[in-house]
Structure formats: structure tokens, C-alpha cells
Length: 244
Image (tube, rainbow, N blue to C red):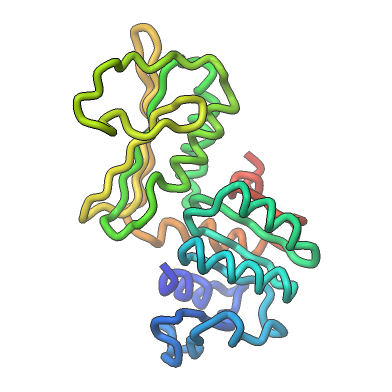
């Protein structure tokens, strides 16, 4: 993902790629050939950085966010695994710069989550199925959890799970916000996919989004980099930037 972000930023007329951080390839040139990659954020001169984009893992993102807040650098974060406690720490830390934490930067995925939120009050049963490549280490995805949270906040009238005999433990998935079951699939050949299934008497509604290539996330990343200076403090979810 880092290489895709570097390519997208470097090719945008309004942005300039200023630095790259990757402990695995520190000292090498980035994929665009325009910068040297360093091993840690502490090796970056914050004077030349306006916005940092973080697609790492939760433990690394926490350190990177601390550096951004301390140095007045805006942070655009797509890392999974951050929780509400992390959000509160960011709200306390980001006083001189802004932070956006989004579970998904694909515009279609943001719309999918919004559509599911709008549909939730009209259906008493729902399930979320997220499907990702076999290198994703966390489950469920941040997108699935954010979807379930939004649906649960939109309606409190959810039917109870009728299952009494779970023959295979975990067959009903994890219990998400509002009691909505969330299922995770990890399969070689996938990129990032999610479907929300909603049901009521005599009908069902399926809302599905598919990212077929990582480039699908770049429109949201670039939008965030350009707009973050205008959104004070910490924002959760790209939908606020899209004014949905």
C-alpha cells in the first residue's frame, strides 16, 4: 500500500512526495525514484512535511501518530486495528495539527457504509461479511466494524439470533455492535470486499462493494491530503470530508 500511495502522491499535480518511512527498506529509493526511504519517522525532518499518510499496523501507527502530533504534522491514517481508546488519545494529542482516521478510503466503500446506515432502521436482521486477501492480519476489518457501528447507532430494533446449537464454534461469526454478526473471509486472490445483508419479511437487501485493486483507495487518500488542513482536530471516517 505504501508504494501505491507514493505513486499516487508523486503523480498528483497539487501534491509533492517529501519523505517515505519503511523499517524494512530504509536507505533505498522509493518506487517513484524521487526520495530516499528512511527507517523511522524520527529520521524525517518535520519542517518539510505538511501531511503524513500512514498505512502500517496499529502498533507502528500509534508511534507515528505521536510523532505527527508532536511535530504539528497532519495525519491521514488508513491503518486497521485502532480502537476508540486510540481515538481519544489522538484527540488529546492533536492540538496543533489535524488527524483523519478512516477504515476505508475507497469512495464506493464509504458510500456502502452510508447506504447500510440509511437502510438499518427498515430491517430487523442484518449481517456483515468482509473478504480480504490472505495477508491481512486483523479481523474483522476496520470497515466492517465501522459499518456495524453505524448500523447499530441508526437502529436499536434488531432481532435476536435464533441459533441455539452452534455445531461448529464460530460458525455465526463474531458478534458486532447491536448484536450484528460480522464474518471475515481471508482468501488468496481477493483484495478488499464487503457485503451487508439486510432482511425483513419477504425481502432482502444486499449492499456490496469490491476493491479490485489498491488504486481504488487512492482517490480518497489524495482528497484527504488536500482537505485535512480544513478539518480541525480528529475526524473518524472519510464520510465527513465527503459531506455525506
